[in-house]
Amino acid sequence: MLLLAEMQTASLFGSDWTLVDLGTLGGSQTFADSINDLGQVVGISQLPNDDDSHAFFYANGVMQDIAPINSGDIRGGRLGLNNFGNIASGVVVGGAYYPAIYQGGQTTTLGSLGCMSDFTGVATAINDSGLAVGYSYLSAGGVRHAFAYRDGSMRDLGSLGGYSGALAVNSSGVAVGFASDTMNGFGRAVVWANNSILDISHGFESEARGINDLGQIVGETMGPTGTRQGFLWSNGASENLGTLTTGRNSEAYSINNSGDVVGTADVISSISFETNPITRQITTITNYHNHAFLFSNGSIVDLNSLISTNSGWELNYAFGVNNSDQIVGWGSMDGGEHFRSFILEVPEPNSCAIVASATAAILIFRRWRRKRMRNVYG
Image (tube, rainbow, N blue to C red; front, side, top):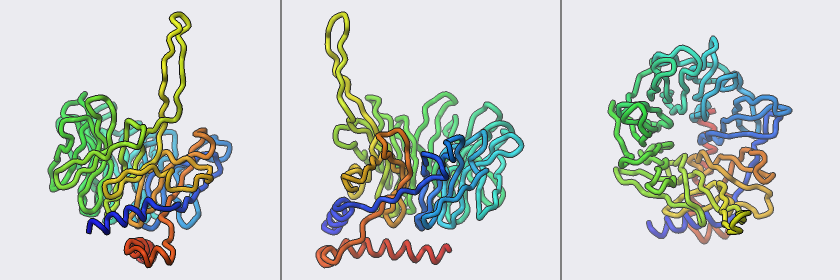
């Protein structure tokens, strides 16, 4: 098993991956949020002349405008997506923004936990059984609480004594996110399961951002030195994912059922020097920016090392990874002036790889499974 894991890691990290530019709705930038097992993507795109931006749904090479979902004067955060193409987000109704689910052209508002004006809350994720999670304010300008919504009913998931918010949910209905123990306290990574809440923060400021169907959880923790470190929590134990070479911080956003994790981590972008005009003392300034990463079988790798060096892309953020190891995120082709959304895919194995490595069979199976799911989910 160890040999197979090492072979799989080598295959994942070994050669140039296929990079797909998702395009835009006519503007200069897109910001993808989530990807499902069919390779469908949701996010936000600027419109022509960059005058406005709308939410989008991307499938089979086509980007569709799905306004008014998360596209009005009041907006929520990232959009969630399940394998049926159902989208978790929010919509403006009567001047207030409410959590909502978008299903095949139809929008269902989910109500709130009490607040009825301005920004009342947002749905952040939805699983294949239709269970949506997010957070909602109990009153205007008041505290927010995580919620679970199913079959027309919104349920308050509670907190540790202060505020809370749910950011992801798996197929079993286990939700993860953050909660505080006082109204003004810092957020802690938590899990909601079996009508109870479990603090997995070890007392540090943290957030849980993703969970797979095995109950493995990823997120980030604020360390004692002030740096943020991505973590993987599994069966009660938490593992620090580390950072990229030269970096200080990392954040993990998503994990698939194979245990592959994606996120962002900072790296040194340049070193500059500043001279004090009075003392003439020279100060060295280290500048950082973000690169997308993949963590697989104990190793963390910069996604920029997996693409062709002459692609023109710099991959900055990876927000989702599906069960076929397709990765969605943001990158830049102009030095960071504008972000574009991408899907990064494991390359098709060649015949030599098939003979040389059993891992090729794993990759072929994952691609077959993605094609089969297209038939299952339509």
